[in-house]
Length: 469
Image (tube, rainbow, N blue to C red):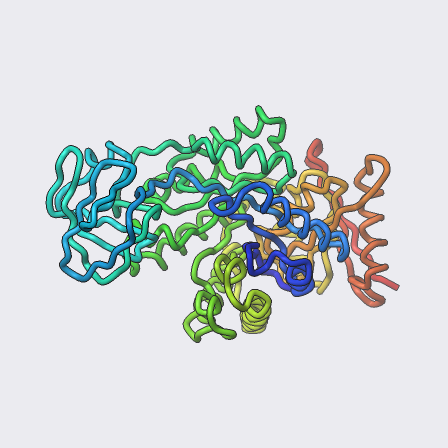
């Protein structure tokens, strides 16, 4: 079983039942629905397909709704080409009929923020400009390369925040949708401070679903500046390398990735890496060598999950992308543990008695070569165990389906929803998990199994060691 989880983005290339089922068979633990594209009827198709394929296979993957966030986009105009050195006029407005190289943008505050020398990025950095002159309602830009300029694309001023609202009206509607369909997580784009997480949590609470997890996407300078507080407040973190690359120079991204990953792990929060992990496979059936190295290094950094975006949403080879990712993860994990390397988490000092218990549990299981079975009602105990990156299999059962789905993206944790017609106590829940794993041959004769649970209301945790006979 994979310890590092696979999360995929579902889209036009992967919305069929056959493809989603193949993803689950290959071990996909979560699905991302990008709210920047499509509308509720399309998202409903995705949710329905994921639900049907998951039920068929007895899987409980996480479903993540990724909010568009406060993106600033240029207005309407005829697409045009630019070459290096060409002058382009950025002007206040919603559209232009000019045949000149004019790009409208309907946000007056942009011209208050712009300064001579700023770098302006269009279309996720595909077009780059330097600001030469700034006025109250327009600016003169010089192209830094060759590109085609299209309408309705994102515009970013490198290294600057534009004072946009945290949640847009379309974001709020998407959140309502996620609540109505019982999504597992909502990913908040362009997080700037812990207050943004608190605001979203308050909204979810008012909508009657404060149990949905919040994922903070780290993709701006303010997010990096306020990283410690954001990680503490969020339920999980995504290293959004694409947008980070819009605000930082490319050579800084690897360092920032390590900082964000280490901070998340230290705080016991699942951390996912996203953007361009297998980007070449959008068009080609196998990855490049550098992509393989990139993913292996992420495994060596002990990330919880790898998130594929374009590769599975619009790429030509969605299933092949997942199969290749699985193969790379398996080889990286095998090499990591066979080499006897110690996960960075083992050097983290536990911050509480419960964390000391979880770390000791992992070390004991590895010493005696046992599997860990844990029954949970809140997900806290399996999360603590996951923090210490166990090399042995961990099976977590819960009678709360949302808790099981939340655990799906946790490193090394294999979640199970224990269906019951009544509230299970911890002993009975653990017994049912044990019986389920026996039926599914996840534990077999000769296995040593370590059974545990940790009720929230007590400081005492329970541990049993059994040999399957």
